[in-house]
Image (cartoon, rainbow, N blue to C red; front, side):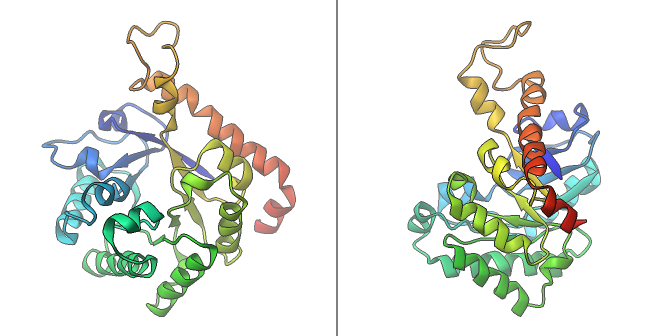
Length: 258
């Protein structure tokens, strides 16, 4: 299980020897890029994009061009998210579209990216809201000829804000029972304790929000550690411990997976 430490500071790619999760929104428009010290994954920044604009303002062609630059100039890009459409009720209210339309656009974008840039490591993402929605999204991929169980990883969207609910754990269980390797976007400690043993990877940058509410670490001279790599790396142990706890509490599942 890989945990990607989320960061809003691209320069960390060159100085941090752990897997990082970096948003396209933080990289777009830069003239130059750091060379990655470790493998990393790219977030498309979809939640912010659609929250702000109610649609994608970046074309598929422009996104492909950007991802190709990141892959070549930063290097060690493990995978990249597509331009997916979240399905939280406040997001569909913003767009005025149905969950089904958001799912269709998510699948359609992945197919477009894969067709136009088969050399780039785009991964599919499952979107939905109700438990049955995710089953329908899987069916959309199947009808399009995409074998999700054969993918390196499949992103799971629109779940991170309700990880305390049993339904979120059920959704993860439903998907992984099909042999699909799942990446949990923005999974918090609570969620990792429940389903960390089921996930192939996850990411979080909750450390920055955590740091804003606390005094800086001893020895730090800034007013807040919200941008502090030392704080982030220390906080990283929390999700790793939560994943280890989930694995320890579910040894039978791990034996079956092996």
